[in-house]
Image (cartoon, rainbow, N blue to C red; front, side):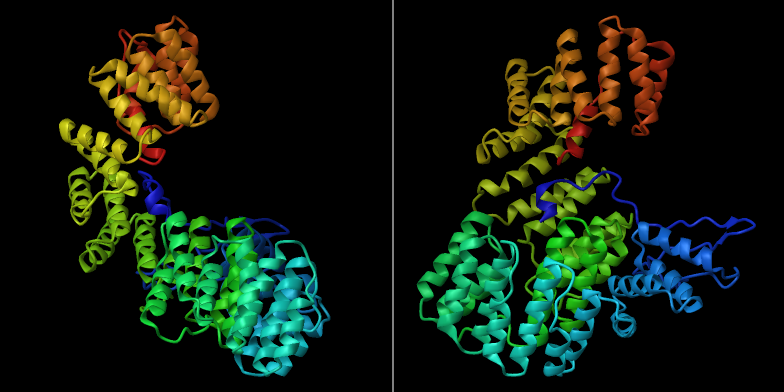
Length: 597
């Protein structure tokens, strides 16, 4: 999870805002719009489409819809296209865009209506085909769904999506052989195969054909042993075929490689209890939702947010309890920097879902992204109170507090989490590292150094720890040879990390080795040209080697890149007066924070 791999940025991500300018002209009036984002805590209703106090124009609404679409504000985009379509109902392009944006926004019932209009207009849109098929599957009209899904369109993604959905419609109609044949008949690129074999296994398992289902899932497992849904189905089918020891071994292997997963923990409990192993999927709507989730999650990781959210919204329409789809949808909204919508998606995870705590932690992080520190703190504190041993919740809260420079409370949270651990293991280095940073900022150096060195005992030569500890030692004039070697090792391990290269250059500067400092800081600038801290450092180094014009250029650049408020007066003074003696700040540590500290 993200909160285990790095720190929350100091500023947090700002909530997504759509800004449309009101443009007046002889031929064009672009209506102003408000944000499509509705704050989860705000009772004020958002206005979608042209505000009531502005006149409607076809061109204005169309351009506003395009702009909203570029800004990934699907609610506003759909509203503008919808009112444009009402004024020009025969426009096939407007119809298709309205349909797609309604679906991406989660307005599935509206999307169904527009999908029907598309179908009647003979517009060959495979998403419309999927939407109409999904409605029939959800309503239990399986033969009608199979007929609607008979002809896949528009390339490999359409072929796979529609083909697997049709197989589940056949299953719902009791036509198991036709369902299996529909999957086997799908032809496409190599990445098809893991989806085909997994869904064939789900379908056969649900039909009680456990032996055949195991053969199918073993093929999928050979192709992807890191996919939770594949590993889970594989373990279940091994157990269902009387191979409980092999099932537990498969889960153990995943736990060893990927640090486990709550879904597999639950499956392990069922297997070890000796209970009958249920199939993962037994309802056709859930089966169709499963393929939409699987593809939507992959598309979302590679961009394509409009298509990804469309798949995931349709999956949740078919199966409102589809927690994996809800978390994936929340993740897509996070990447789109729409934390309000991410919170709404994550709150769809059922209370008894295996992903509930993960979703709740992400909700807390999204409150922080909205600059709602109190809500984030309260939300995560409640999770920790409920389960103090949940290290992910502790790290998330500690990182938020540390990002807001509330170091004493952050130290307390990290300490409370560490106190729940009977024996420190390799993965716990991160907690020690984060607590060490908090203690160093609180001027508790002896305790901070102990944390950093203990972290290195757990994770030898960890570059982030080496960098932070090494810089801190040099900053205090302690153990200089060891400190410099630490940072050199960190650079060797991460030669393209501009922040760590900057630390090496800055340490050379602090040691009075200015020519060497210039070399490393110039390299750091190449890696991170837009970082104000590194530009400031390079300016200092240039000044000390007599390159004063270049020094002022770098300081001016640092000023324009938005440095921290407390650093700006120092930079302005250097621009005006230059340096009279070597300067030093702990800005390199701040850079370390931005790089995961």
